[in-house]
Length: 238
Image 1: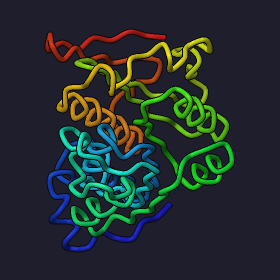
Image 2: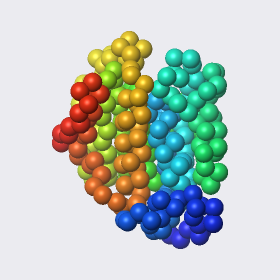
Image 3: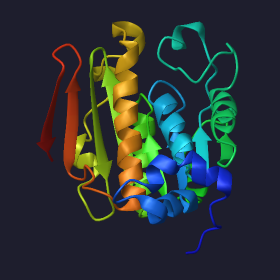
Image 4: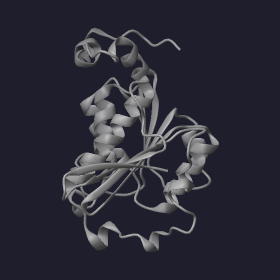
């Protein structure tokens, strides 16, 4: 599929991509053609939106029904206005960062009635939500629509990221059906170190760019984990 040529301003803006071996003009055009949906505009969504908008993803959809609260601000660095809808706040941030990106706001709650119509308009989905009900819904819909899904999760000092690709290992292979939100620690109950969301969210953006451009080896069937206190990354397969 052809893309509009990069404008002189875009050429200057993406100059470090255009000179990067393996990315170049073809990779930048792939980013410009891409339609990417970010589910969750919170701690993980903040670096995801920032780096994908900065990279020049052509269309960036953002889903979040929640409002910004004071306790969000230590980690959800896109937001500054308490009480604002997070998807709309993220839109303002992305547009200010890169006016060449088309931002589509989905400011309502994601549910079984709207998830497929919303996700079907995109090529790639990133999920940074914090509950298994939504994560299962997004994963099942991505699988049904044959969409790749980048999934990140954080808790306290630790985080992880993986990629679910059509035909590859499934969400249920990593999260068994008996797993329940009641069994998992909540951010409200246990806390979370703010920069942790930046580490994992940035890795999610990296995986998305790799999938869009065909650069490197995505984390399909592999979970990359980060121990923030120990300063160590590790990996396991599933």
